[in-house]
Amino acid sequence: MYVFIDESGIHNQQGVSSVVLVCISIDNLDKIQSSVVDLERKLKISSFHWSKSTWNRRENFIKEIAKENFSIKAAL
Image: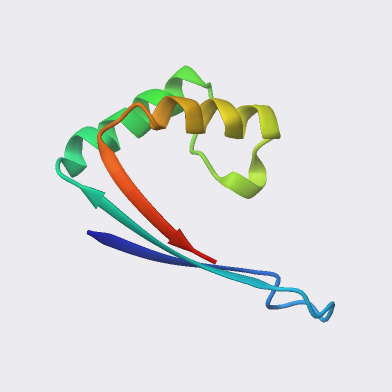
């Protein structure tokens, strides 16, 4: 299991921020990593980063990576 924490907006003074905790369970990490690299190549991007991607690219990335074998839980 891998756990990630992402913070958004905590550095600005607007009073709005988010913290997300994501837990990912993967049986074969090497296969998932390879799939991500292949998907980035297919989408013609050097590396996927959510905030630097268009909504269309985000949707395409999520649709494709969701075909892989993993489970995820997120808390906002």
